[in-house]
Image (cartoon, rainbow, N blue to C red; front, side, top):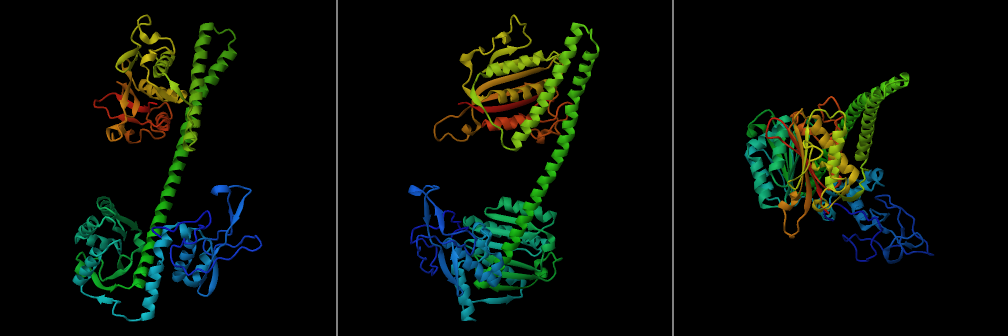
Length: 569
């Protein structure tokens, strides 16, 4: 068994020779009268004795294949097991917990959680522990009390240098960890891990702020070294070192306030007995698991707090944004209703305002629905061959048709460095009069994407560029076919992954430095208008297509540039 015990979900293997260890398992019970055993596994509680299987190993409702459980005698009692793995783990746990194991049975986690595999002795270790208890005092067993600090440090270093598979270090206090750093502990660990690539070092230490930082640096810089910080309330008077689950050293503190390690240590107990090493391993693994669970709980609590904050912020922003377009819709509708003889021109003006706010209301509700789909991972794409020219020019024309577009902003579209659209040209001269769907189809790239979603991304990016531009500014959209970013890193197979690169640039106010780190997150906006959802939604749409989106940090004071890629099929 290497690492963790496997769960036999489909019943035990039919191969009679399948045994991970020599378990001394009695002969399997014979099927009687065509019936199937109906017992439960003594370890994991799984119902055993029935397996549903069709022809050639396929699952079928109308074909039932029975098999017998493994029956093993442990300490004079017969137990039924679903698999040899369960039988082995039961023996291991029984050797550690004895009669206390009864209250823990029926949990599949024993064979699925690596913790139990590490904390309990394996078959070979159980035999060694048994032999140690039978032979009593033996020249092979060493239990030595060391009182000289220099000797303690020497023995600890020799143990670590002799390690072949694993080193476990549990520091008693944060100061004990600090003293080891000052005396070259990290250099020793670097020395042994660099020469033995399979060696794993795990360190557990109480921590203050300085130790937390030092442990992160150590775990980052040293290969195969994992450091976890436990609460200071768990600190003890004993530092423990265990090597390869067979050598152990327990060092007792005399005065933790001393910086000099000679003055801080009192004595140590060194042992090469398997029973002592496994006992310390169990303590270490239990605390390691406890710290892991605390980290998971803290992470979940933070997620819940963040979700509550997001919900409150979302409700507040949504209520404000939804109210804004509703008020003019209701107000102007009342005006039209109360004034029977409003001039036609005035009616058109009022209706335009109503329609514009209704569209804004529709956009807000669609954004809210999109957020829900993204967070529920239910955003679906309807891909089809697209004409990118048609999409970009269509978004530009929609912007020009908007009655709010009155700041004389120039809109330019370049496809493969060829000018396709320029709002500064008169309609008689502008290429923007190209009929819908006919914009130089020969130069269009074979992109397969969701038309509505890609239009939504372009509308968000172009809309933001226009919103943050001033009179006389220019918004430029450039489209080209490029190698994907990954292509520059690997070309072994000789193929080229091509992408459609779309870039939206403006000469407006630029990106506020305060929101740059969270630009593509929800509510990342300092504008008085809008919920700050557009870039978040755009990012998820692009990534759903298998592309990437990013913002370039402008090299000048004004202006912003957003780029995204879509794979070319």
